[in-house]
Structures are given as structure tokens and as C-alpha cells.
Image (cartoon, rainbow, N blue to C red):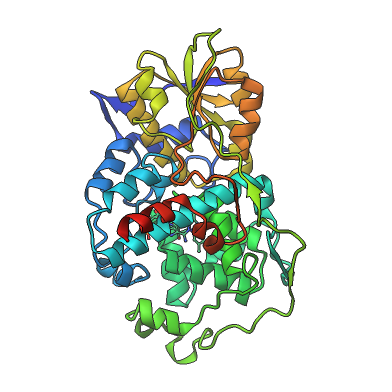
Length: 432
Ligand SMILES: Cc1cc2nc3c(=O)[nH]c(=O)nc-3n(C[C@H](O)[C@H](O)[C@H](O)COP(=O)(O)OP(=O)(O)OC[C@H]3O[C@@H](n4cnc5c(N)ncnc54)[C@H](O)[C@@H]3O)c2cc1C
């Protein structure tokens, strides 16, 4: 069954009423989010929508980024730019962000571009391996089985009450803001999977439920990398990183004199290379040019959470067609995302509906879209590919890759992939 949802009470006079979003979610998406009936929450201070994404891009400054990227506390000294939720949902393309940092000191720009390329690499990897991203890609790590480790990460949620300041603060920020710095993502993942030996997948799912930027690509890669499943080496977390990147935290910790992470965790007993390689991959990156079927005129634009920019070709070139977005009921029921994530999406969708006609539905995307000749953008995720195969869109825009490789590439590691990236070749030849 597919139900039409109205955004009328979220949008008035062309602007979005943020205060109404929580009650909208409680009313329309009951049973489909983590916090339970009537208990929807919003992210503390990261707002969705194209206007917010553009504001964040206009304010982007990466001077000092190389030195301060990993800084955790105090917050005022952090170098992280917090653009990830906008990049994740395609409100900003990696190319737009890349172009915005052309005019800054080379050391900072290069470091920043390197991180954008990590994001791009994770998308290429996920595009290629698909659902296999959930199982260890290159190395198998033995995980200690824990009776509590049943896929519902009870202990993770209790880190909000942990006596360890370095876990408690990170958990609070994750749950309240829906975003944490890369450094603390690595601490958290390492403490969970490497030191405590819990299943990487359950920790990954906890992040996925709460992070506004949560993606199968970058989240999967991040957890596999920390847990040694990409390189064969685990990332260890100990007090020394906290002292360096959050120097005020240990002095506030009741365990300062008996710190449980004084030393690095011991290396895992078993870590085996799998007989699988991604060394010579011919990538399917979708069409490089617009594909238009001549026989049928489109009647709607199919949008997904992967690409919600108001500047995308489909929305710009077809201003009179309605855009359609479908909350996949079965998927939401299974994922049980935090309502923060749904709120971020709704703010974005409400802004789109203030700008042009948007039809919003809850149900099965195939049922909701069947029989409508669609305009859409090719998207490098398995869900889109599966639906597109059935829906046969009549106009397909290319995915806005930052790097479109030619020939075979290695996806075995970030550095192997990067060294064959046309973007790096282009940049180095310009600078020479
Ligand atoms: C365990 C773990 C889980 C992660 N989960 C996610 C996730 O679900 N979604 C996600 O977008 N990123 C994820 N990352 C990568 C990274 O931590 C975030 O992209 C970054 O912290 C976002 O904050 P920012 O926008 O301030 O980043 P900045 O430091 O300002 O970097 C700018 C942009 O570069 C990209 N980027 C930076 N670092 C990385 C990286 N290591 N890998 C991939 N892209 C990167 C992001 O798009 C980011 O917005 C994860 C990392 C780890 C270790």
C-alpha cells in the first residue's frame, strides 16, 4: 500500500516550520523510527535543506585544516567542516566543495581534497561491491562473540552513562547532534570492535542509525578500516589520542588515575587475508552523458535520499514536472533510523516542496512509481539499481562523480585507487 503524505503543515509562506517537524514524524511515520511512538527528536543544530547546505558552503574555510582536522575538544578549535550531511544527501556535490577550496594554502587544500577523495573512493568501492560491503572485504578479523552482542547494541547506548569521559561525550554528541568528528568515529569504532571485540556490523549499524551523514559506503569503509578488514592492520585507541586531541577531557574523568585505556589494545589473534582482490576493476559508473528515450515523454522526476540538490539537472531541466519522493516503509521498518535523520530529510524535502511541486509517499517505491515515465539520476547504490531495473526511467542523468576513471582501476585500497585517479593526475600536471 502506498500512502500520500502532505507537507502542507510544514511549509508556510515559502519557508519551513522546523518546530512542526517532530510532530509530523510522530503522526506520519509512527513505528518506523528508533525513538518510538510520539518520541521523535531533531538534531541539535545541524539543519537540513538546500539553503542550509549553501550557507555552510559559503562559510566554508579550510585554512588551518591540515593541523586541526583531528582536534576534538574544545569545539572552537576543531578544523572539521561539518559538510558531511549535505554531501551525503547530494545537497552539495563533491565537485562543488572541491571547487570552493581552490584558493587556500596548498597544505590545507591538499589535505582537504584528500578527504573529499576518501568520500569519492568509498562511493566507487560501494558501487562496485554492493551489498558485500557489509561483510569483511579484504581481511577476516576474528570477533569475540558476546552474549549481549545480538545486533541490538545495548552497551553502545549505555555509553551515554559511561564513567569514561572520552566515550560519554562522543556518545552524547552522536545521539544529540547526529554527527561526530572523524577522530572520535575512529576511537569509538576501535573501542567497540578492536578492544571490546564486539561485532563490527552492530557498531556500524548504531552509527548508521544516528549519523545524519550515515551511508553504507563511507560508514562501511570507516568501520572496516578501523577493524583491520581493509589493510590487515587494526587502528588502536588509547589515552594518548585523547590527551592530544581533547586535552581537557582526561582531567574531568573520574577514571583519570585508573584509566582503562592507558595502553593500546593488544593485536587481535587472527587476521587473515581473504582470497579476493579488487586490483583490476572495470567500473560501471553509469552513463557519462544524458540518456533520453525518444518515444515517451516523462511525467515525473524520481528523487532519492542520495541526491536532493535543487541544482541537479533533472530538477533544473524539467521545472514543470512534479518531483516524487517515496519513504520506503519496509526499509524504514527494518532500519529503525533515529528520527533525527528523518527530520533532516524532511527539512530538505519541505524546502523542495516550497520551491516546486513535490509528491511525497510512504510505501513501496515500485508500487508508487509504476507506470509513470520517469526522469532520474543514475545512482551508485544497490537499492536504486534494483528499482531502476524495474521502473525503466525514460530520462537518466549521469551521477556527478568527482572522478570518472578510464580503464581498469584498483579499488584494493584508497592509496592504490587515488594514484590512478584522473583528478590527481590533472592537479599535479597543472601544478608542475
Ligand atoms: C568508523 C567511521 C565511520 C564513518 N562513517 C561515515 C559515514 O557514515 N558517512 C560519511 O560521510 N563519512 C563517514 N566517515 C568518514 C568521516 O569521519 C566523515 O566523513 C567526517 O568526519 C565528516 O565530517 P566533516 O564533514 O567535518 O569532514 P571534513 O574533515 O571537513 O571533510 C570534508 C568531507 O570529506 C569527506 N571525508 C572526510 N573524511 C572522510 C573519510 N575518512 N572517509 C570518507 N569521507 C571522508 C566527507 O564527505 C566530509 O564531509 C566515517 C569514518 C569512520 C572512521
